[in-house]
Length: 365
Image 1 (tube, rainbow, N blue to C red):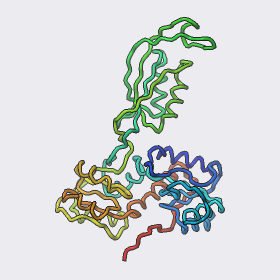
Image 2: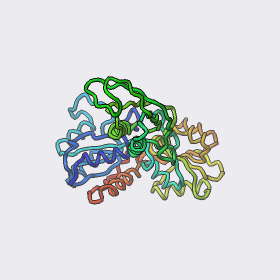
Image 3: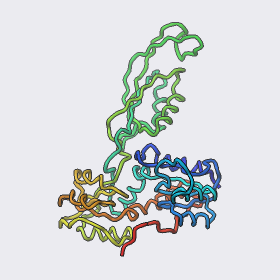
Image 4: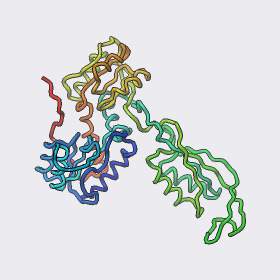
């Protein structure tokens, strides 16, 4: 038995909710987060048949990629399918959790596995997250610099690309005068004091802000800790939409599409005309990724693998890139494997099983 809270906390540490898109609704959607459950059902989306499966198997926790609730509910009367499923889930004591665009956005999430299945090596984020990096500046007495620096690095600050423990340190003097009721680190109450300090600057992703501040305050020797947090415009390369990288060996276009069909077990691929050139650099995005076509082209991708391209969007390839629209369900079905692998590695004795239901609403004749 495990508390839902333990599983949710872990999955949200891997795919922080702050990384989700504005239209999304990741997180625990129904159920008591403190409830204990013995198993979970993993699916791409919650449908009436998936709900039946959970009930029949006695499973009380569903982990889904697509949120059952996308927009706000003003009433719950069973007038539509979503409301009916929510009511039924509550009646049967089933909690529902979703990790959607936040899981798409992280290295190690859906798009990482899709890139791997496509044969991409050394994949990187196609469109890194913007506005997600912040800078911490704090001032530390010389004797305690190492302790404070180690604490903020351990909390997740100071990573730039493949480098960690990155900071800039400047010597200077800080001044303060302790008032009544204080217990100053140095100096005397009521007297102006000057202390040799180091100004420490380091970057961190927005989603660890609370954790980082707690680490700073716990490690810093001062009773009142002086620190500043600034927004910075740098891209955050560890999260964002889509992935891009190179194949181990070049393939012709037909052989590459054949690989996709075999690896992903799909039967139909919509694509632009063949350009009769070798495929080496490939971009991918699970789900509706046509908004990334320009990014894939600017970075020199030979093929962009995604889904939900409209008729007119195909023209934007301009005979410069091969678009391979493999279907929404087909491009996201791997997320069940992502969830399963994450849970098995973290909670090896917990019974998390993949749904046996094919939830693809699209059929091909």
